[in-house]
Amino acid sequence: MKKRYNSTFKTKVVLEVLKEGTTIAEISSKYGVSANQISKWKKHVIENMAEIFSGKRAKNDSSNNELEGELYKQIGQLKVELDWLKKKSGLFG
Image 1 (spheres, rainbow, N blue to C red):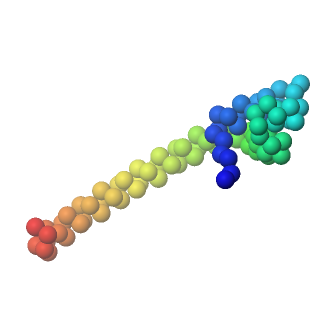
Image 2: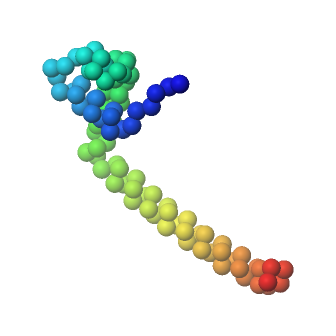
């Protein structure tokens, strides 16, 4: 079974790798995670670091909120139409 690590743990390990002075092998031994896995986490962090400062997350949150609002509006409209159809058909009332 593959072991899963939470984001807090991964962050802690990668920060320790980025703080020069300790090798990946030492950190691997300390936390019981393979050096290869730690290297993958480090690479992922470095590749995605710019997004933290770019504001993309805020834009995504905003667009998700807009989409959510639109979907709730559609749900409300469909519920009104369904209730009207049920009333008109007399089958469910």
